[in-house]
Amino acid sequence: MFQSLSERLGSTIKNLRGQGRLTEQNIKDTLREVRMALLEADVALPVVKQLIERVREKALGQEVLGSLSPGQALVKVVNDELVAVMGDEAEALNLNAQPPAIVLMAGLQGAGKTTSVGKLARRLKEREKKKVMVVSCDVYRPAAIEQLRTLANEVGVEFFPSEAGDKPVAIAKAAIAEAKKRFMDVLLVDTAGRLAIDEAMMDEIKALHAAINPVETLFVVDSMTGQDAANTARAFGEALPLTGVVLTKTDGDARGGAALSVRMITGKPIKFLGSGEKSNALEVFHPERVASRILGMGDVVSLVEEVATKVDQNKAEKLAKKIKKGKSFDLNDLKEQMEQMQQMGGIGSLLDKLPGAANLPEAVKAQADDKQFGRMVAIINSMTPQERKFPGIIKGSRRKRIARGSGVEVQDVNRLLKQHTQMSKMMKKMSGGGMAKMMRAMKGKMPPGMGF
Image (cartoon, rainbow, N blue to C red):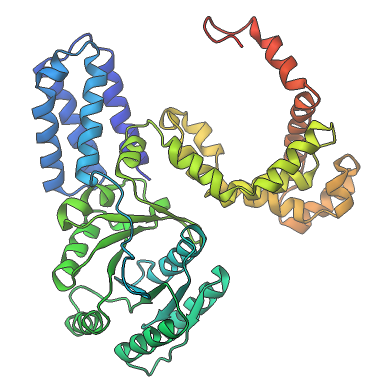
C-alpha cells in the first residue's frame, strides 16, 4: 500500500533536502509535485486542496524558512498534515456497553465484510480476551452464512445459525438473546452487501440498526476503489450513524488514496486495515504510523508488534538453541522460517514497514515475492522426512522426483538447495561464539563511530 505515493513523495523530498535553504519558489515547486503525487494516488480533490494549502501555510512560516535543515523541517510539516488528514490518533472500538456489545458491519457487495467479521472476531478473542459470537443476517446469499460458519470455526468463536428464508431483524434479535444467555462479551452482526443506490436494501439495514441499537456501526470498504471508497462511505453515513471504517484489500492497493480521503470526507475514523485472506491480517489504523510509511520512514513500531504477536516464540527459541549447540540447520527449519514470515503478512508487508524500503531498487523488490515462498514450501513438502533432515542425500533422481511432485522445474529445486546451503554456512558461523568472532573481524573494517 502507498507504494507509488511513497516513491513519488520520496524523490520530491530528496531533491529538496539537497538545497541549502527554502525559498517561496522551491516550496512552490515541491508542493506542485506533492499535489501531482496525491492526485495520482487517487486522493479526493477536496482533500488534496486542503492538505496542500495547510502545508503551504506552515512551510512559508518562520519555523521552516528559519530552520537549519529546511528540507527536514518541511518533511515534518508534510508528515504532521498527513496525520491530521487521517485523524490524529488511532481510535479503538468502543465496547463499553452492557454485554453483549453489538457491532454491526455494513458495506457494498464484495467489499470483504464477512472476511472482516472473521478477522475482527479473532482479534477480539486473542488480543482482548473477549467471548465473541458472530451471526449472518445476509439472507440473500446462502453461501455467506456458510462462509461465516467456516470462519467462526477457524478462529474459534461462537456462531449463531441463520437460514436464508429468515428476516434479518428476527435473526439479529434471536442472536442477541442467545448471546445474553451464553454471557458473550461481543456480538458481531454481518449484513448483506448492498449498493448505496438500492433504497429497499438501505431501508432494511436502517430498520436492522434501529432494532438492535449497536454500539459500533462499521462501514467495510474496498480500498482499491480509491476516492470512490470515500464517496460511498459518505452515502452510507447519511443513511446510518457510522462510528468507523474498515479498509480492506490494502495489500492490493499501491496508491492509498482511500486511506487519505475517507476520514476527511466522511468525518468518520478509519479503525482497521485489512490485507489478504488470512484471519490474522487485520491491523489497527494508526495515522501517525501510516504517515511515516507514506514518507518512506517505515513503521518499526508496527513491525515489532507483529513480531511479538505473530512469531511463535517457542519455535524461535528452539531454533536458536539448536544453532547455538552447533546442530545443522535443516530444511524443516527453513520451511518453518518461511511459514513464520507468511504468518506476518509476507515479505511485502515487512518491506512496507522497513525505513527506506521505498528506495530499494526495483530488481530487489521484484525478488521479494511471496509466491516464491509458497513455491519453496511446496518443494520442501514434496521431500521425504529423511531428505528434509539430510539435504546432502538429494541427488539427480531425487531432485527430478521432488520437482515433479511440487510442479516446478529441477532448476527451482537446485536453487532452493543452494539457498539452504548458504544459510547453513551462515548459521554455523553464528554458533558457538561465532557471532562474536564475526563482530571482532568486522571491527577494523567499520566506519568511525560504528565500532563494537
